[in-house]
Image (tube, rainbow, N blue to C red; front, side, top):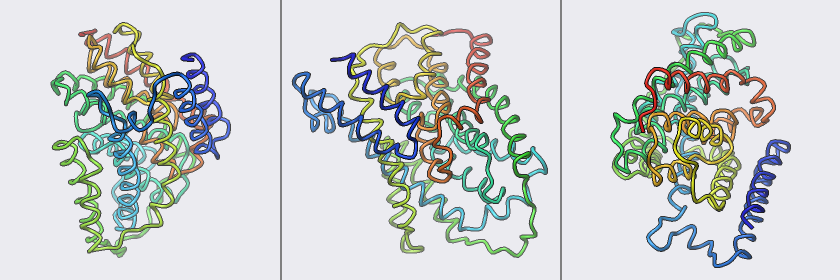
Length: 382
């Protein structure tokens, strides 16, 4: 039965890759089959799995966070775009490919103290404006990679690193991931920026008189502050995001239309995460450099949250290398990270696994370069 469950999950991923326009239906079908297998396999309750039992927290917290963050950051992205700030950025970004590189660097820095979904959404919104909607898929992949890399060494930049922090792993044990993250960033960012420059250059329009909606900009700042605060205080960033979103609705109406547009991608990721949680993965391979590297590759198709949870329970890892692997590794396929799923709502064409890998090949290579360079310089310290 365990083997059948893995086969079903693999077939689900394959169907998503082939029928990417029907990714939600594929994920729901795979989830349904896995739930049926669980019921036939013995004592199983989907309610207990969601809510929790015997001292084990259920999946509700992760799923609710994903629902709140993906829909909330879609609203944040809309407010940021309509604030007028992105329309002014071409006046400050460098000319030619260096402008795209600086934009990716901004996403990297933002993700170090914001959730990586927020950083990716802001980066995607800016890119859509400064490149007049003509964004190369390789650059889209790079935006996701920059967001994931930027959060990999910060305990408030990614869900996985926050989990490590809460479990008692000191932030200084994780910050070493930035050596690999910086190395990989320079590898893929330069290539992606050049890809984008050949596809569409930054257009420097005369926008001095373009109005800036300061109220919308304030709403964006409040939403980001609420997200970070709730993440630190309650390990529940979606709570702070939506509290601020509701409060800000008195200043500007909530754009309900963009929430509806994001629901399909949101439910897709929730279904995939829940399906992954049903797999009989009770033990990970013994912690080594090689197995940690493979976990990063696995995180591109298998949700990194349960992988991180198992790694923490197992112990014996070099936490900085693990943080980089599971954080950055999901960038290699569009549904390998929540940031990738979120940005696919802005750029639906990025949902093709073939185009993602073909155009974003530099991210795959950069993952290996960053990982092994960190190992060469810092070594393995479990």
